[in-house]
Length: 420
Image (cartoon, rainbow, N blue to C red):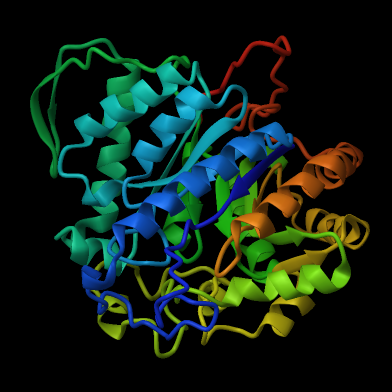
């Protein structure tokens, strides 16, 4: 099993009425950056990097970064910069990007070069995740939403070819044209870094990932619709002539561990505090309706069973209550003794081979995060590994998602299968 750490890296400014523990709801793409404090931002970037370094020290297999634009709930507008830093200052953990928003890149050759450099500097620890993005990204980067899906697929095909086939060659596509493709930076991993696809809503994305044999990571959605979405992947895989297993599935959800049950609940409630997180539809008062109905961005007839609950678990003042999320396991908090059985329940129900604990978010402090990371390293991660072994949950780094065969490799050597 692959066990990773994640946080949105929210912009926290306790001195502001917008970003304190009881921050004001913010409608998406309506808040001016006039109130942004570069000193606060600088301290936060360094805080989040320090936490990632400590997560590796505590035994996490992967450090997950994500990307959103023009919003305070995620400071990762240029996550490749963060990944580049981690590539140099960390030693062992995989750097999982979930992910670069392909349709907003007018020059994916530049992305080919950036990601290859990260993979080389890290000596083969990059996991390249790609997403389609939301209306927020389409508007803020002037990307045509009607071509979102087409641009995503063409950019994927182009990047994989540029990584794997010697140049120079021409590329004459519908959305991208190059007279000369011959990047003088090629990935450390051969044939290329493993690709993962994260998401919450699009049936097309899940089916496409299954056809490509790319692992799919569900992002903080409720358990039953998540399992139904994995079944769509499994059904598509069967149509393609192979059987999907745990190596094809990943899951991200909120897990916080603390020293006492009382402190754990107090801190876990901060998940739904701090900057509003208007992710997709459902956060009434913070979601911007104009961004939800951009033509062509997501087909309304091609949505996953997670559609109605995709936003409800992702934070923000007007989302589902803390109590509701605790009841259905989309927030897990407590001491190691009480958290471990709840994690087991999720693993038994969904059977993912890669998991990511979403922690240190909302209005949580640096001390809140560091306590949790320490306890995870001391007690939770070892126990989760035992559970995964018992349930025979293998990651895509243990079983090739393309062939279904176990990957044999020396303990000190990184060999990553291509999942294209």
